[in-house]
Every structure is written in C-alpha cells, then in structure tokens.
Amino acid sequence: QVQLVESGGGLVQPGGSLRLSCTASGSIFNILHMGWYREAPGKQRELVAEITSLGYTNYAGSVKGRCTISRDNAKNTVYLQMSALKPEDTAVYYCQVTFTIGGPYMNYWGKGTLVTASS
Image (cartoon, rainbow, N blue to C red; front, side, top):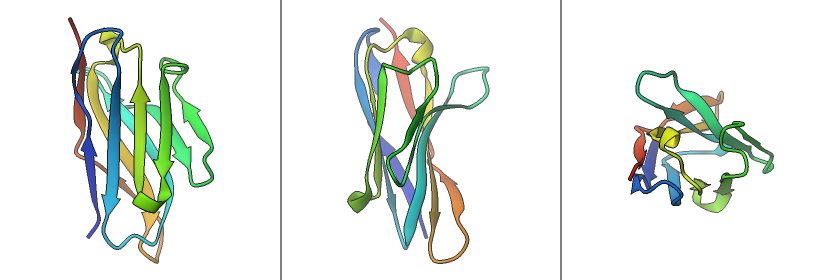
C-alpha cells in the first residue's frame, strides 16, 4: 500500500514563507511526476507547480517567482518552498504523485495541508 504524507502547512503572515513536504512510502518502483495543487474555498483545484523525474518544472503564473518545487528521489519526497505569500494563496495544498509499483503508472493524492496567509 502506498501512502502520501504531507507536512509544512500552517498560518503565516502575508509576505512570509512556508515549506511544504510530501513523502511517498510503500512498494514504489518508480515515481514519474510529482506536483502540488491547491483548492481555495469556493474554487476548483488548480495546479501550483509540478516536477518531472528529470527535474523539469512548471509553475502556475500566479506563483511563478515566489515558489520553488524540488524533489529528492532517494527519499521519494517533493518540496514546495513558498515565499512572499499573499492572502490569495490561502488554500488546502495537495500533493500529487504519478508512480508505478511495477505495473501501469497510477496517480495518488495526499490528504492535503492547509496554508493560511493572513494577518
């Protein structure tokens, strides 16, 4: 069984920084794609940032220049460093991982971690 454990969310003042982490555990053979999405109240889930197994990254325009996604393949972990946070960054952040345990690739989602940027 595969699990995704997210951490690092919390309350931060506007302009502050947070680092989210997501670790995949279980019988994982290979991780292809890792990403962070967010869902704000009343809005649809949207991509924040994603990173491929080769390290190619893609960011939503709203966070470009303020967020950095990275991954540690040895630890099956993806990070999202967020800075200059704005109130509109407030949302539940979900980790998404595309992996295989030896068969077809599957998509898994974490349970989410709440980020609140408020004074």
